[in-house]
Length: 144
View 1 (cartoon, rainbow, N blue to C red):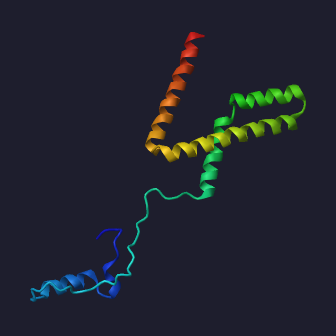
View 2: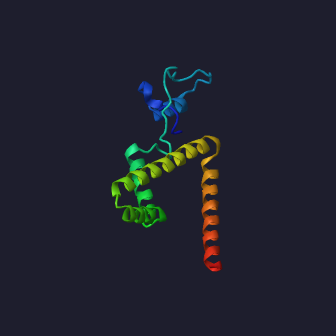
View 3: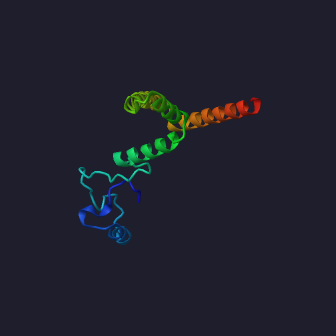
C-alpha cells in the first residue's frame, strides 16, 4: 500500500476481507466488490524536509552568526573604535546598524537566489566560494 493513497478500510471492510472475498468468488464478472466514495481524500505522507519552526530557525541562525563573529575583524574594529572614541553607545549603535544592514542584504540576496537556483546549486556554489577564499588566505600567508 502506498503512503500517499487512501486507506482501504474506510467503508468498514479491511483489505484482507476484500482479498478473501475476491479469492472465494466464483463469479467471473468484473463487477467491483467495493466502491470507494469519490469524496475520499488521499492521505499525504510527511515530507522528509519538514518546515522548521521559526524558533528553531532563529536559534540556529543566532548561534551560527554569534560564533562566527566572535573574534572576527568586525568585532575587533568595533572594540578599537569604542576604546578610541570614548563613546561606546554611539559605536554600538553604528556597528549594530551596519550589521543589520549587511544581514538584510544577505537575506534579500539569498531569497532572490533561492527563487532562481536549486538548493544543490547554491550549496555547491557556497562551498566553492569558501574554498577559493581559503586558498586566497593561504596564498597571502605564504607570500607575506
